[in-house]
Amino acid sequence: MEWLVIAAIIGFIAWRMMGSKNVKSINTLDLKNSLNDKSKQFIDVRTPAEYKGHHISQFTNMPLNTLQNQLTKLDKDKETVVICQSGMRSSRACQVLKQAGFTNVTNVRGGMSQWNG
Image (tube, rainbow, N blue to C red; front, side, top):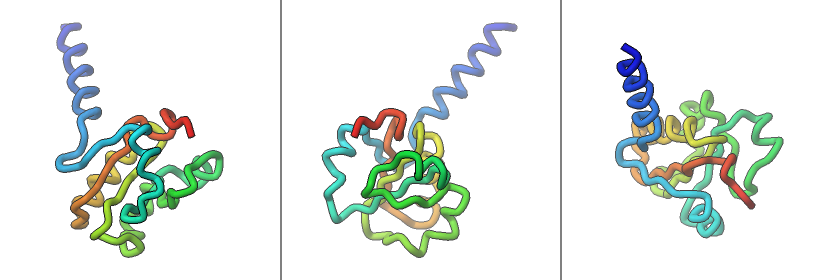
């Protein structure tokens, strides 16, 4: 019975770590190389307190719980790069963006916890 619980936990973790369908994923080194690309828009889906504590200047704060209401502020034709603290909320945000018709969405793996900038 223990092996069943362990298998379920491993399966859940693997499922959560897989990216959203049709969403690109980059690491923080790749992000660092693209921050000055004006053809991209950058959003940080952490809470305002997390954002205020430490953020990357090119990123606009749009907390995940308010993202749906702020979609009109974003350009669907631009690549949208999304970051959070660890990559989980940004993965969810990428799903929200894809469902809203954004076609070029990129998740930052590891999020701010991996950022060395």
